[in-house]
Image (cartoon, rainbow, N blue to C red; front, side, top):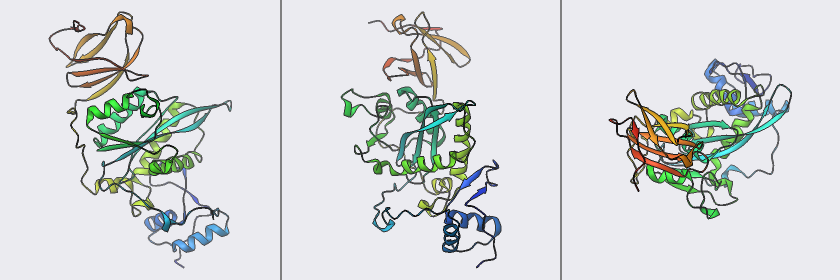
Length: 332
C-alpha cells in the first residue's frame, strides 16, 4: 500500500475552494484528492475496503449494474442544456421550516452547472430571466431539455405556450421534453440535484433565500472548478466545457448583442414604465389597465419586449425612439 494515511472519515476539509466546509466523497474522489494534494494515494479498491470496514459505504444491491446503462451524452458543449426545479427547506433561528425551490441548469456534455438559483416559488418570468443570466455567461445552447412542469411547457395542459417556450422560439433554441413520469430522460440534472442536496446537508442550515443563494454560489464554484466528475473522465466540468468548440443554435431567432439585459419592474398607476437608455430616462406607455402589474423587460439595444412576470403574457413590443422622452402606445 502507498504510504499515505486515509482520512478518518469520508469527509474532508475543502482546501481547494477556500471555504473550509466539509465535503462528502466516495473512494474515487478521495483517491483523486489524495494524489493531487500529496502526490500519492492507495488504490480505489483499498480505499473502498477501508470505508466499508468503517461503515461509510451503504450497500445498495437493488441498483442496476453500470454495464446495463445506456447513456446519451451531447457531443459538444452547449449542444444541450438540461433544466429542472427541485425543493429545499430553509430553517430559521426558531427552527421553523420553509420550503423553497431551486432551479438548476446543467450542460449535458460537460456537466457544467451554468445556473443555480433559489426562489420562494418560480414564476414564468423567473425562468426566462435565469435562462438569460446563464446565457450571458456561457452563450446560447442549441437545445434545452426539461420535464413537463407548468413553468416549462403548456403543451400537455392545453394552455398554449408559456413564457419559456415563446422565448426559446424567439432565440432560435430548440426545446424538448422528458416523457411523462420518466425522470431518467433528464438524468444528469436529476443526479445534480442529489449531489447538491448531499452537499447542502453538510452545511449550516440556511435561514433565508439570500443565505441559501450564497451557499449555491459556493457549491457551483466547487462543482465546476474543483470537483472531479466520474462521468467525464475525472475532469472538472469547466475543464470539459473548455476542451471542445461550443455548439450554437441552428434555428432562426433574434440576434442578441452584448447589450442584452433583463429588468424587472412594476407598471405605475398611470400605466407607464421608465427605462434608462444611453444615460437618458425614457417613459414607456403601457396602459392603465396594466397598473400595478409586475413585468419583465427584455431589452436588446433599442428593441424591447415587455411580458408579465407571472404568466409571460406579451404586454408590449417596441423599438425605443431615443429622441423622445415618452414612448406612446401605438395607435390602433
